[in-house]
Image (tube, rainbow, N blue to C red; front, top):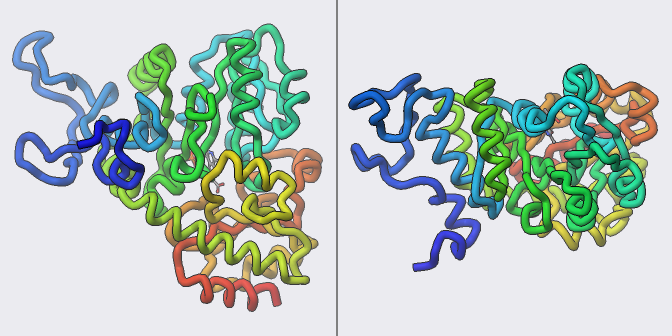
Length: 383
Ligand code: P1T
């Protein structure tokens, strides 16, 4: 029998972190719906004392996602943003963070409008440009935070090169791997110090939970995160952990389907004159296609298209029948959104325009429905 570190992704997805329940043999890790745990005597217990600190359903989820990312430790949080906030709360006032200039609008808002008030300093830079990344580093830089591919314009950062730059200055490189998932991209193997997810998205995959998780190999980082789980309490409840764990069991199957549909739809859109530009790292026309091929095994289901104007974007978003107009992404069902007024509304307009998050940009989260039905839906919506 292979040791856990030798097992393949699909086997880990189904089994890692889980075993039949010792009390009953239940094959599924139970939802340990409890706030506290009986102690036999003062200080004598089974490893669980209070559910803010730990919960067996959460422990299983943390171990499962850690295994999928090829990491030692997972720390789950109540949302993707809570996970990102925890990473930054490992720092202290006066420390400096370099952040990619295109990240989820909520991450941008958290850094600019909440954490920067607490004495942390942030520089936003285009991390596609490694020289710009290097130049933005200060003596006080402790963290480099990148999303790759980015939400929504699908920029790619060279994780291995960014890790080298970050290591030299003894800062942490943290990669938001929400769009690619560990099935297609493994930042820890490329040198990142930690990976963060909005597990609301592909990890869960069924649009019924909000959650986040950090994975790392570093003892000091996980100790800090566990201290923050205990001290701040932004942890997920057991039911949410159970649902995400149910989701990760099929991550490999779902990602193959998202990727298959994503590629077909991106190619179809790229050949359609009603669409002015298509951003999808799997297309040879993507300016960073070669880098994407090097560090990703597949490209998934996220596509951004430029349709030319706010009016056109509104028309397309209101006409689709299978793609539902909604925030979020990564579920089995296809969604369509307008980043400028939805996910990235908090980003100032000049910044949005400079990044290509124009009023005519439409984002697609391609689900796992039949691809011909999805193409027919987009075809009629494009008018
Ligand atoms: O929504 P939450 O679970 O807190 O995760 C925040 C988050 C973090 N990182 C990335 C790359 C994300 O896309 C998100 C959330 N994004 C959306 C809700 C969205 O529609 O883009």
